[in-house]
Image (tube, rainbow, N blue to C red):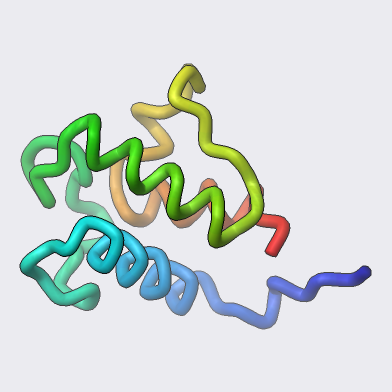
Length: 94
């Protein structure tokens, strides 16, 4: 089975991830208002550890790979929308 994720641009993927986050957490912002380089945690969107767990579950289900809470790179992975999208682009199976 050959998957062609290259046909999806990085910007389109980032928009899709922003929409998933906004929908999953029922945020009072529009996906296009999530700034790519603003922090997801704390300042920025103001998300907390429970929100990050919810994002992990949604991302894992949607893109077919597991985001683990014990990953030593989580601070980098969840640093911003751009960082999270970069990780998804490198790991996704669907």
